[in-house]
Picture 1 (cartoon, one colour):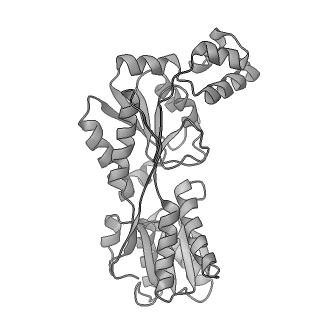
Picture 2 (cartoon, helix red, strand yellow; picture 1 turned 30 degrees about the vertical axis):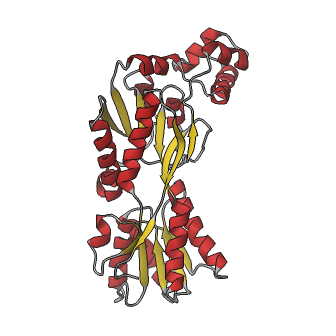
Picture 3 (cartoon, one colour; picture 1 turned 90 degrees about the vertical axis):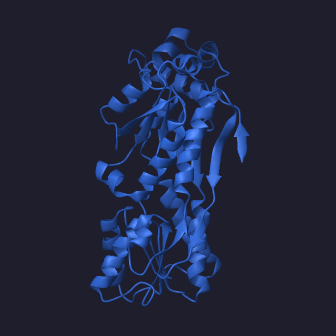
Length: 337
């Protein structure tokens, strides 16, 4: 596990010198002022990233703890957040650790920030730090927040910077072992229902699927995007079945999508575990809410939430902490595969 010192050694004067601008220009940039030329803005932002600089507002927060508040940012639509058991486990882990500290959590559900409202709030000094519970490659608005207060990401950011902190699970390994599990049981014609292409968790699980097939000298029977939703999983399964001969085995990149796939299989008179071996990912409550119970890849979502909160508390306390934490996955055998 990589351990790196907390950022903050650089000064505003060093940033100004690196960017070739005045101290006041740097101050305007970090405070969100629009009275800065595009060239100066780009130069200052580049210098901040290169020097790993924590602006004064964040430094004051670290020293004085005036707000004692942490933002939990959920860049998802409300229905997805409340409908996916993965988020319940993540939030439970975060709440457990933060609840035992002197901090309170402010939850902010923001699927995008087109009007800049979330950024303005998070940069205003209202919180000492932020935890991002899910991450899309398009969520670049959080980078502007990370330039002002410490941010810990749940999952690897799509545009990873050396100064970023994140806690992830080994999604590549999980996707690979799920696929190897199906192959070891004699299934050769394998399909997958993956998540959105703008999420690193989905990208990595799909990579693991492809890696295992390539090692076995095989190609996928089908790859369909289920959008990490139950309805999306059902639609993806319908597309796979409509394309021709059903696969022998199916790796579904979330239990919620797998539950949707079960419904589509039932529509066609097929049963998971009897006609098609199915393995999911998460080991959430969705895995045991279906019949037959779903074989799945367990990711430690509760532990991930705890780690994210612990990393942020370490940063706020000025303690050295790992910039990158990767948690293991494991297969949970049930009846579907």
